[in-house]
Image 1 (cartoon, rainbow, N blue to C red):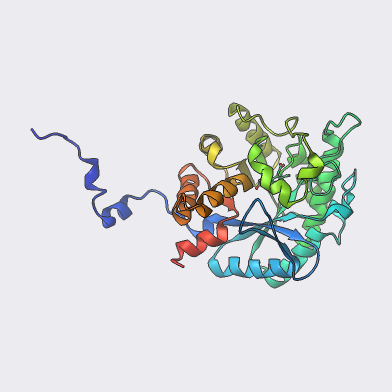
Image 2 (cartoon, rainbow, N blue to C red; image 1 turned 90 degrees about the vertical axis):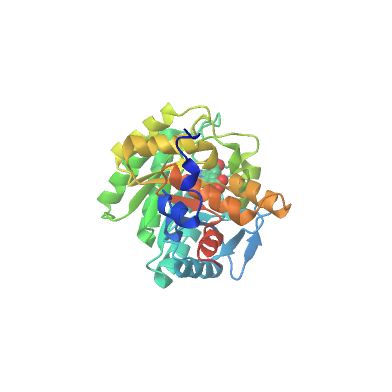
Length: 330
Ligand code: PBG
């Protein structure tokens, strides 16, 4: 008898049979573009630790939104970089009806009503100390007062027309409290994307530069609310609670180092499960590409496909526009 009895390579021999047995296909409709918004007009401020990414004033954001629509990217995730001037101890600018996020939302919805908008809900861009919540005298982030602030922030965004509010703060009970407040205010269509399994990761460094919270945060970490990177069972408990409290979709963050968590969450709950390829992941890929050490298009599409294989329904990535172009052969 010939050796080997089973030849796995037969199906890999030609492109047609590789295509027929392919289990997952990455599409532009799987992607969510991530953008930073700043005040002003005609401004595009490069983020030094994220080459290729700029903070955009609202007019520039409209241009980016147009690209997303043209490329078949279903949604844009918005993060404010409001500048040091409006930061305060109590983050009140976060729920100013005429604040940056609310104006950006109204402008985007007026011009591109079909493009889904996802608003970050956390206080860090608005606090003088760079924490996601309100702190007591010892610097501890207080849970309930923070949740009250997050409710205000969510209502302000919903009022402006935000499609998804996305609490990224990891306070206990905030999904239920926000859901309740949205229902009471009649915002029955506003979806909640819960950052359920959000880790206290060092891969967020470039993002903190982008929203201008890095300097304020200093050496203070977020370990009293974000999850320990060593844990996975705990992630399932977090996700379970957010689902029970009324989340419409859940998220795992960061992405590539947490594919195991992503798979377990998807298998355990069958919920719409999103993953966030975060700023540090972008920076690593970009730096290697710029040095000529990795083929950017190939490795980026490989990482995004890996997210789908691991169970992601949608992927937040700074590469969304590039990836959609590459997928369309551009
Ligand atoms: C803060 C927030 C962070 C990110 C999204 N929302 C940073 C943090 O928790 O300090 C990180 C995103 C990225 O790194 O791309 N609420």
